Image (tube, rainbow, N blue to C red; front, side):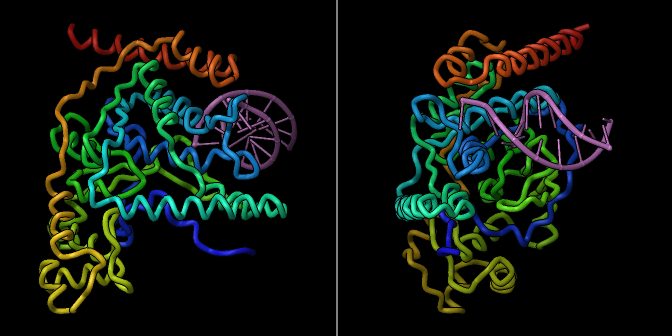
Length: 353
DNA sequence: CCAGGGTA
DNA sequence: TACCCTGGG
């Protein structure tokens, strides 16, 4: 029952239909640095870790902790598998993202109102749905996430603008092997490889049902996909602008497949616009600015990928004292983290002899 | 999402 | 051991 639309939070460019991911085994990720899109991961935890009514996990002061729980346990799982995670955080969004940000805020607030209504009338199905769309990653939540990762000894990188742009740059520079994100925006920023579904849980429950689907890690290889589609990265960006990106609304009725055909036929966005008479909400000047942003985003080379010894006291203070995590669980998880850290150190030493 | 306990 | 279910904060 009730209304539609819980779109809005972190959508990403809708070019999924064009891409052919390949399954990837965790063994292939062993020993590799992976730049994780932090915002993407944290939003995922927020929307998925909701025990009952669409309410996330919270501490005694009603501060949200779902993101910390997800981040803590998943990161340890990854490290235990020999993966070297680097979390890349968003910086300041470009000016031309303002409208999108504003619209998403409105969507969120609408979802929040619907969530309250659903709770009042006891419609838990809707409550869950709107609860997922209502959540926002606050400054405080991001700061806590950074604090936790620092205490765990996991490197974090602060992007000047979009995290996915920074992560893509790090892959291009060969400092890391791939970007981990559920969206494909990193492809537009030039990432050669994207890993999706980077979680140990191989099964995910379909929301509001008791059914499970298999969710396995998968790899999207940019070069292979572009070759198969017979287009360049520049042309993929033009396709993205046609269907809509985080920075602009696409053309109504033009999906990924149509956009691909148009770009294959006419070669570039300028010609497509001219031939089809398309009208965007944004001026053409702004569209070129967006295209240029995908091609040449601001990035930084100032980051360290050093994995440090976990600071048990700092983690305990944050998770147990401040946010009421279960001490036994935290202790168990920390033992695993420390063990994985020592193992990695040992392997490094062995390389010398 | 993940941890951990119950079940066959 | 594999699968299922509940609770986590």
